[in-house]
Length: 122
Image (cartoon, rainbow, N blue to C red):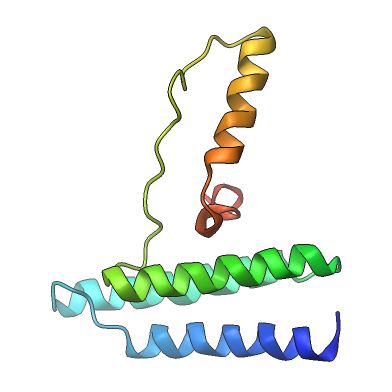
């Protein structure tokens, strides 16, 4: 990892933790606000630790893009949780053979950038 990339990753991490500290839930209930603040901080810690061992520059760039996308979407919609994805047409194939592999490939291609690492943590 280059020094510039390291600085960018650390800057994103600090930005996410700053957002978690100042987050206000859309419902304005203190209980919701606290739950969402904890979620943001824990999700950031989990994903950054999970990707700590990534050394490939291209993979690091994808992780940075995912983080930036999640920040922008969360701030725009005032919702820290990932937005749902929908299965492509014919998304429920039989559980065997070539059709299943094709459907798995289609699901992977249809997954938006802001959810690339979400399944690994859920």
